[in-house]
Image (cartoon, rainbow, N blue to C red; front, side):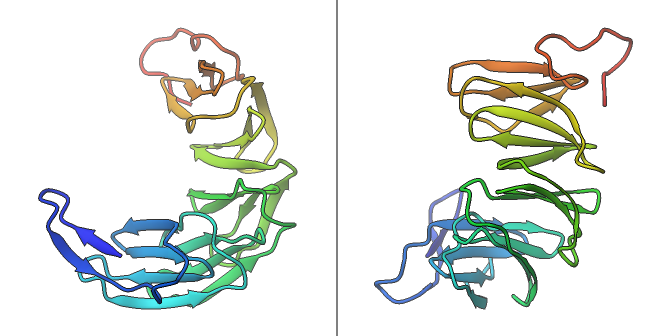
Length: 220
């Protein structure tokens, strides 16, 4: 793996991730906490300034998604559908959540001290222990804004869930596959679909159209 100066393209460092016939580095995340790279069943953490290896971890199944780093923890999704939480500094395993298999929709995000995981189901988890707070039977990717979790089913349905309980607020069928993450602004959720449409949905009820008129900025 090579690191290049973003301004000049000059080589900063190179790091060997494995033997010459190793699985290519398919998934990578770089943050101030480190550079995390998956090569098949192996995940390597590198120092972003020097490329020095900090730690390596091995798993029973290939790690299939870009690592997610939140609050000193790196979260990984593997081919078996499991979510692994590792200490970002040391690689020590904190917990593993086992689900019913890989859905191809693994995702993890966090907000207000809660971890939200998508895949075979949408779950709210305790970040420190992995303990489940609630679960909704939706096979979907997740993102979160304020008190709402957005679950994007592969068929094109967007669900708005109450972040504290998982209760459904509304749902909207785009009629195509999602091409963008939901963007929230001015009381609207903007999302693009493979059918060529960009939808602006009211945050209150998920219906297309402008948000209710009122004085000052609209927040929710």
